[in-house]
Length: 368
Ligand code: PMP
Image (cartoon, rainbow, N blue to C red; front, side, top):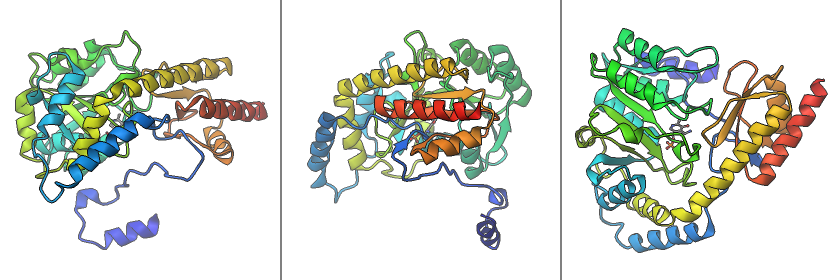
């Protein structure tokens, strides 16, 4: 890494990128991969077939650029989300990471700032750095909770141009109450902050957890981002999207690259949306495994956070590094998010979850 840094430093790199580290969750060839919150249940056969058919049908037209406005896809996404949304309020890009980047390109940038509340999604500071946006670190309570009062006060004090609220939050898995979103939005009035609610894991939420989509009417600076990487099991296809006021979508047209969403991506996403019933059945099974992990970790005397996502953050470990390594030796990779005494695990299939829980219990027993 030091060599790499030295080599980079000899380049005429932008000063504000010097010393930065790229996103780097390990991509190891391990049998049980529970480290990056992918959908562990795979793409159902019926959906695979629908995708292959859809891609075949666009193949002959690949000499032409795709529909720059991806109208059919925006219509299907609006219909999927409901909440009275219309296609003009939808936008998509290659993963929600690209959607977030476009928001920063349009509303952040040099001389502007974005506020996040760590521990939260590790890409926010990197996306800020890449777009020349100053990243401001807000604070949470010791138990990582973020209350409406505290969040609103920090927004008023720091007057950011963009606010990242991640709900359910990565890495903790907990969802925010809509009171927090409302309070942050109001507090952002003075600095005209664009408030992003990153709902990448929304489909895994408990039935009584409400989406910020319900708050969109009348709130022009509010943006709700989603992805097909998690519930739709399409991390490899790269399709993220947002819902917002039509004028926010107009702003993103100023920064998107022409034809950024390939015809293959559009066809793939449309096919998956048409076959969402079988995908959503898998989501239910993943939630079941998630709840099983929470219960089992509690039984082992650990402290799992309540989770509205497809992963569980848990504390109470004496030596998380040793546990991480012990799991890896047994062919199970989880995530060390760098928070003392804690690890994060993605809900696997029943088999994968059992393998994780069994090995973890053995490692804890060895700890004594
Ligand atoms: N937001 C959050 C909170 C995430 O955890 C992730 C992926 N780990 C993303 C956004 C980005 O996902 P994608 O680009 O695959 O849509």
